[in-house]
Image (cartoon, rainbow, N blue to C red):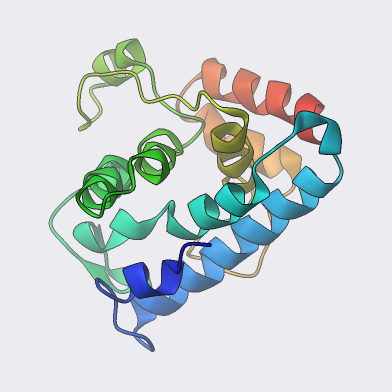
Length: 179
C-alpha cells in the first residue's frame, strides 16, 4: 500500500493547523468510505485505493486562501481539487490525481464551470469510477471547519444545492448506491 503520509509530509508540516485539518478530515472521509464499501462487497471496490484516495483527495488545500484551516495560499478554495491533482500527477499518481480533480462538491461539468463562472479549468471534472464516486460521496458529509461533526444527508444536500440541482441529484443517486 502507498505510504500517503510520506507524500503529505512533503507538503505539510506535522503539527501545523493545515496538517491537522487535512489529516483529521481525510481520515474521517476514509473511514466513512471504507465502512460503506464494506457494506457493499457486490460492488467489487478497490478498498486499498479508496483509502489512499480518501487520504490524498484534499492535498491541494495548502495552495488556497483558507486561513481558518491554516492555509495561506493565493487561490480560491474551490481550486484545491485540480491543484492537488496537478501535484499528484507530478508525484506519479495519475489515478489518485483524478480523485482530487473530480471530488469537489459532486464534481463539475465544463458547462457548470462556464455557466457559474467558476475559477476552474474549463473541462469536465466529474467522478467516473465507483471508487471516485464513493470518496466524493463520503467527503460531502465532512468539512474542515467543523472537523469532527458529520453532516446529515439533508445538510449535505443543502450545501451542494449552492451549485445547482445537478450536484444534489448526483448525491441522491450515490446515496441509493452506497447506503
